[in-house]
Each structure stands twice: as C-alpha cells, then as structure tokens.
Image (tube, rainbow, N blue to C red):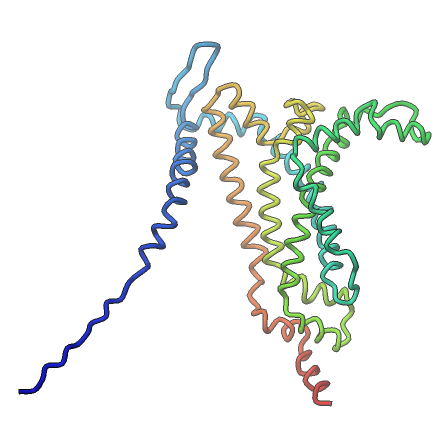
Length: 329
C-alpha cells in the first residue's frame, strides 16, 4: 500500500484588526470631546437659552432667530476687524518667510550660521501669546520705551497713545502675530523648497535662466501645496485670533471696538451665559472657515496638475534636451 504523505497546512495570521485597535482611542476621544460638543453647539444655537441674574431663560426653540440676530448685529463689523488685522500680519509674514526660505536653501549663497538663525527666528513662536502681549503693551504704553525714545530723539513732543488710535492698535497686534508665526512659516517653506529636485534648478541655470525667473517658473509653482497649506492654516488661525487682542485691550477691543475679533465676540456671549447666541456665532464661524478653506484650496490648486518630474520641461520648453546636449559635448 502506498504510504500516506502528511501535508502541513500553514495558517496565515492577519494583523489588520490590530490597526483598528490602535486607532480606536483617537476616534473615541474625537467623538466624546469634539464631535458631540460640535453637534450640541449646533443644537443649542436653535434655542433661546441664557441667564438673567439667577433666573434661567429657556431653552426655548426659536428656529434661526439667533442666526438672524447675530448676522444683522455687530458680527459683520467684528469679522471685518479680524480680516484687516490678519491681512496686515499675513502679508509681511509670507513675504519675509519666503525670502528667508530661499536664502537659507540657496546652494549659491551658502549662508553661514544657518542653524543659529533658524533657532532665533523660531523662538518667538515658543513664547506665550499673553506674555508677548503684555510685553508689547509695556513697550508702547505712554511711559514706555518707545515713547521715551521718540521724545528724546525730538520726533514727538508728547507721548503717543498707540492703543487709542485704531491703525496703530491694529498694526501692533498684526506685528505680534507676524513675529510669532513667521519662523514657523519659514521652516515649512524651507522644507518644501528642499523637497524640489535640485536638477531642475541646475538645468534652468544651464539654460541661462536668471534667479528671479527660476523662482517664478520653478520654485513657486512646485511650492504651491505648501503655500496653500500655510495660507489655509494661517487663515484659520486669523479667524480664531483671540489671546493677543484680548489681553492688550482688556476684553474691550479698544479703541471703539476696532480690535474686537470674532472669537472675542463669541467669548463675550459665553461669559454672559447666552448659549444660544454663542452657539450661533460658533456655527457661523465654523461654516465661514470651511467655505474659505475649500475656496482657497480649489482656486489655488486648480492648476497644480503638472507632475513634478515633468515640471522643468513644461516650464522651460526644451531645457532638458539642451542639458543632454551639454552632457554629450
């Protein structure tokens, strides 16, 4: 009789379930501390729910009355304040950060002490916003160092009340936002530039392209995803601007509420226990942020469809062909 051969069966082990096990804590925390509060905020925004002294009014269902009251009230003015202050800080932030990023990543300049300068420009980001606000409040106070220097130099006869003038108050807040975040933006842009294939820059130089043209035709288009990320995150941070103007103006948004931001307006409703109006403001800010983020991403990334390996050919025509001819020679 032929001998029976035993066959060993190997059972494969699936580790896919462990992936769900490790990501489960994130979803649990997200649902409990973010998703449920977000849904409850939208729910309470449809109710009249506030407190007068020790008496609590509501919750009474009022449909979209809170939204109408917020949109026809002071919120558009505070949204404009937030936009102006953000633009005043973001424009110099992106320009200075781009300039520093190009300098630090340039193989032609070969700047010395780059690690030192990278550390120095990032240090303001580590300072608490409230501490920085108090520092600048003392610097620009009527008896502060700035007024004293201007008086000693004969530029002014009496102290300037910087925080009583809308343009200077907004400019100081915008400058502090710039000072805190331009280092972080510089590092992000440097990472994006260093991720671009250096052969494209060498090819463009062989083709006779000037540095400015290389920046416009190669660096800027291929850096577009990082720029979009910086713009969206900065815009979200600008909409959520709160701590610096809150501390500097003692929650009042002085002068004449020209530095009152959206989140300061929201905080005013929360401290007054008007949860209905506060929820309406939160939902409107959320919808506004989502719409602006989608618009910025779709409009700026619309033309970013060129593969990275073909960018040099698409931008400079026959640049790669000329480089091959030089190598043959």
